[in-house]
Image (cartoon, rainbow, N blue to C red; front, top):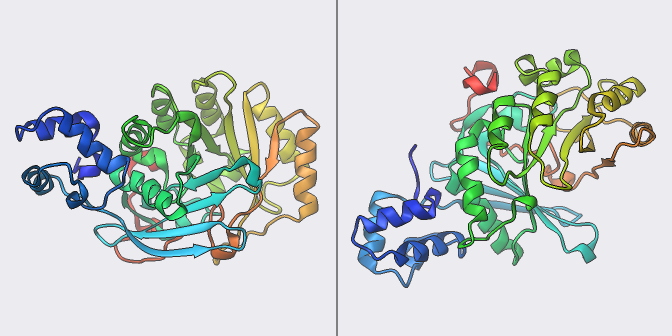
Length: 360
């Protein structure tokens, strides 16, 4: 794996610096500059000798993201578009809480340039697959967003561009960097990784100790419908997906979150609600209903407010923990399913892409 400087773990940094004859404490200094302070250049590491900075940068480049665009929605949501070192466009979203007293700030993080999953209701899918982001590119989204907001996010959700479990090696490395006490020291209870349903990736994510929160984009109650709107279901159908979810280790009081994008006339009937109850019965879970956020292209429609509320009430009558997720930032295309950092360079339309094995 081609590692950039910010992708190195603390142990790897100590090894690299030790090879140059640096004392052991130098590794901690460099790590803190990269992950506590989020520097964009080795020249900012003022307590590290210049010769060691130069030697390190010569072997392992520091490839900072370049802020390309910041948009603010009416509700205070901010969408950040970054450029990578090879001029790819990615997006992150800062979402303040509706309740100011809770002082919650969530950052939606991207894990890939584009996406290979080809979900029919998602704008990112229209981009095709570009490449995986490195662990350094993933965590730097957090550091840059924190600087913009003037505070660190309270919660991180891997629900931006890309399928996190399709880039599991770099996502796992990013989780370790984010949780390290020399960095931002995030609790895994404050980090959620969302997947379209890559069953082997769910199993591997569950082996992390401790594991982050798991969210699953379910979006259908029959394989016929899910095959149509989420091609990943053809390899790992609903039964296999839910079996993997049941095996996922949960800390005390934790639950798996199921995301369910409501599409009018597709998956929003009373029969769908009843099947959801049967599918998820007995599982420690909560269900987020997401009224479809439109974008140019697919012929889906958002259900009426009355249908959405009726769907929720039918689930609540069966004692399910179910919530309607209010669209945030939809006026700047920052809501769930709308991220599509439009940039044709280096992206391959999914229809012409031979997808990696995990994605089919």
